[in-house]
Amino acid sequence: MVSIEPCPGFCPARHNPFASEHLRKIRYRFLNHSLTSLLNRFEILNRRAAIVGPQGHGKTTLQKELADAITSATSVRTYWVKLREGDRKIPRTVLDELFSQAGEFDLICVDGAEQLSWWNWKKFLRQLGKEQGCLITSHRAGLLPTLTQCTTSLSLLSDLVTELASAPDAAQQKELEAIYNRHRGDIRQSIRELYDRCSDGLWNVSRTDVTM
Amino acid sequence: MLEILLPDDRTSFEAGEVIEVTASWSLETPADVVELRLLWNTVGKGDRNLSVEKFWKYEQPLNRDRVTETIQLPAAPYSFSGKLVSLVWAFELIALPGGNSTRREIVLSPDAQEILLTSQSGDDE
Image 1 (cartoon, each protein chain N blue to C red):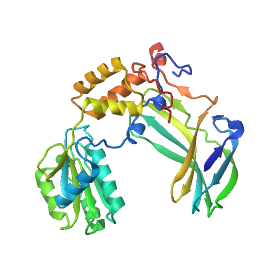
Image 2: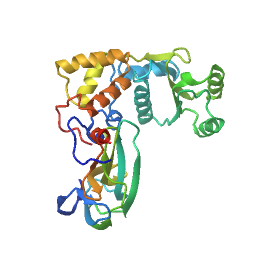
Image 3: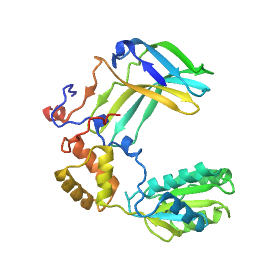
Image 4: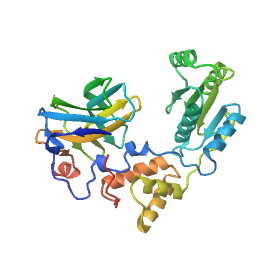
């Protein structure tokens, strides 16, 4: 059944400031390092390194930021392999296409490298060209030298909420703390919960310019 | 500057309605092509879906020009919003290369009003 009158506390998805559409536009916040220092370190590590951290801690956002910086400053091209939960191997056809296209100095980014079995990870490494760069994200250290360990904080979540919606008031700040702790610092899950709270009218947004 | 002008500055239309849309642009650098698109996309908690339903290409455009198209709006899908997802129709005008663009969202449905899917409607059942 369809209603055409909005009900109290109803926030349509397109007005929800925590929609995935808005999240994608947020850039990585450098807490402990600068972009330049990470790029320098990546060079020192012979352009093979891992961004390590738990889920929802900004690994993929940072990986994309670094890859964009590398490709915009050089003639290097970037190739992406995105692995999902349970992807224990990269399909042969994908590998063949990847290594037939990637140039000698190009950068290969693997997102979620911890998903690969040890054997398949080693096999992938063996296929990398001598000069090809490789930047991975992983939940665990040890696959490649660690470039940085991604961390989050309550103040980071608070900053993101301010950017997406509006600055949290004192009561909302307490709520944020509970949400952040409940999700053990997972910013993605925290923001998903905020999406739900907002859609149920339980999170008030004072700003009015949050439409798409 | 890119601009999309809708009839009487309306932003709500009936599905299948025939309207005149004017695309106007004033470009600082020459473009290879200016494209007017009619599309819908979803927005919400999940991944975004997008479908370009119609487009009009103006090759080797003048730096400053204005074009009016008579357009029959599609019959579906309708603009709707729920808590998890909204379907949003829009016109977009984009200059390539460079990607300068502008977007105007519209509502498209049988009665020119966005359909709202609320939890209240479910509670009534």
